Amino acid sequence: MEAAVQRAYREIGGLTPLLADCGALCEAACCLPDADGQGGVYLFPGEERLLPGTDDGFAPLHICEGACDRVSRPLGCRIFPLSPVKKGAGWTIRIDRRARAMCPLCKSGLKGLDPAFVRAVSRAIRIIAEEPEGEAFLEKWQALEDGFRSARL
Ligand code: SF4
Ligand code: SF4
Image 1: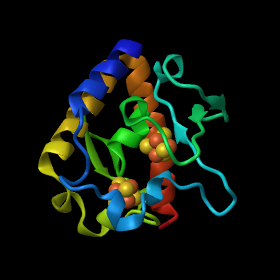
Image 2 (image 1 turned 90 degrees about the vertical axis):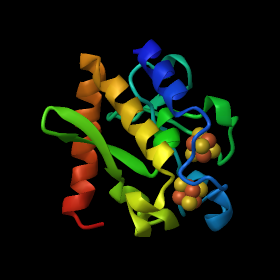
Image 3 (image 1 turned 90 degrees about the horizontal axis):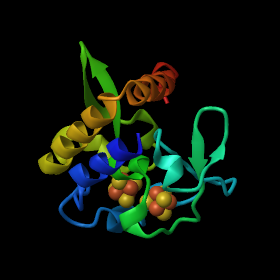
């Protein structure tokens, strides 16, 4: 899986949700720890070879302190505020329900994001889905995010 993750990184490259630095809109809210000082990003399969993570039951959790070297940030950060979703036999993306609480971009939906970023993240997710272990993780990720949708958070 490590090679698939590296391909996914390359697919997204330097693309970000907006052409401008969206962190200026929100003081990089997605990198800040929560009120309890907690903060972390789930690592995709294979990423635990590239980045440190502690197992929290769902997947290795990469803990950061609100700053990192952008070129080595986890895939979960690179795709934010998008989330994988299975449509028919294939995979696409949607706005991550969990991002709504902090990300001002969510209000405008996919149309408000840089189309090149949206396309690149979709391709990156399909790369992960090529491997059975990757697809199983995407299904798990989607189930977790579905739970937030059904709770209407
Ligand atoms: S919370 Fe949204 S707008 Fe703010 S830095 Fe993260 S992706 Fe950009
Ligand atoms: S790893 Fe980097 S990009 Fe991801 S939340 Fe932490 S500081 Fe932000």
